[in-house]
Length: 598
Image (cartoon, rainbow, N blue to C red; front, side, top):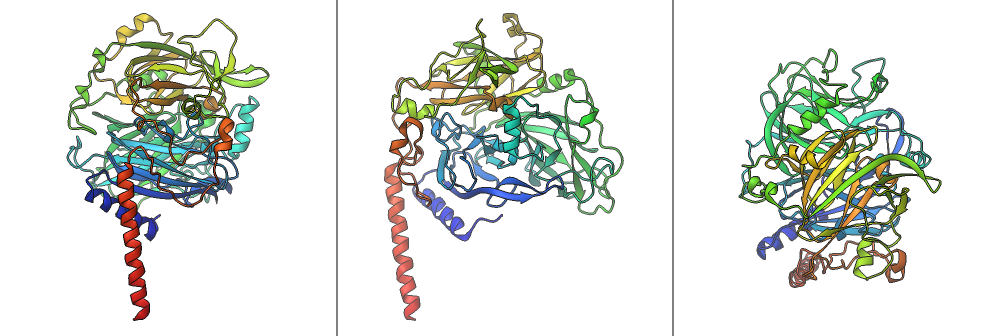
């Protein structure tokens, strides 16, 4: 969808202003989040769209740009948008999760303002509350290199974003009620590719009349495919019939370039592949996303799109491309281990990615975090990390910290499972500013779980089956383990990450599997800079107040408001900008009078 003329003009003025005053450019988006009616699997249902789009629009920006997104909530329940993988440096106020922001009430709007500081890569956004991601509301984020920083591969002929995800015809409200009642999500009704159902590759499995995705390409050209698993609980394998996938980037890190015939993409993960159109151009090819580690009854839940060469006259045919290692988790874990950081490539800065020698840094804190399947706690189904099921307080953690309200949370999250009954609590990790934390995720569930940390990229240094021990460190990759923000943990296995806590704030560490997250598998990491610069973590002027601070809330304005106290824009520049707008308004007013006179 093209931006409105006013939005384009406003953004152009912002960029002109920033160039004129030697600042980082701004880009402005104006979004209305609402229900729309679509039929991705042939059955009409309500999904969450943005400006009438499902999936939502793509944020296409460049390193260090300032992003301003005005979100109007036209749903019938509160809303928060979170920006998975975007490192809001020293600004967790913009994170869009329950621990950092009061929800945007139905009918209200809120303006997110953040800078994509020192970042590149492929990410996505989605609604973080009330199981809403199961209804859509997601879209892509592309952060391009600055022109002075070379990309470690040739410029592709096109850039294509692909969203994969399991999909249920039940509403998100019905699904969350099932989860609350201990009902397993079960087999998805389908897997969507870019919000569309499967191509009819099998008349017995796919009914007639379902719209499917067609990706148009030119023979001989090379395209960058940014592929995201935006689903709620299902690991998916992605492959293109007869075509190789050259992996080049994952969640903000350039990788060692390796060819794969298929790639397991777990919930919340993102990958960039270069795909060259080097096959017979007279026929179409299948693009497939199928569930992993499941039995044959899941066959109907297979996403299929079509890769269409421009001069093709023949539809895709034959069986879907086979999946090697279909029932073998060892295949998948070895594939995951094969993904390496490209230590010689620059990214957001000219120095090589490998200049940060993470393997030589002394670890200051160690957390072994154990998850369990849902269990009854105080008569309700809950999930836990180290025996604690997180419960969001009515007053977000950032507000409680800012106003020094006691009793909202405790800094007592255990670094290992304690010998005590599981409980529901608001317990945080007390992170050490500029410390180096080792986190080991131990998966005692029966399915693959993925874990994500907001505000940071972490180094995935090890994973294996069995129980992690101190001796497991001998298997760590301390040189080129990939830096990313979401990692998988296989059932009966562990994954170890290292993270440098260099960004002050309160940051969400959670299960990306939506059913696990919704029932309590999350924790926040508080990182306090003892020499805090007040500008780093200042309360936004447009903050929404709730819980114990509800009385501070002012009347809501539905108009876009530029926040003068924003973390990336000084008051002096805003004042100059406002004067500039006032001058323009005067000039346009004078011109209007002249036109009327003539």
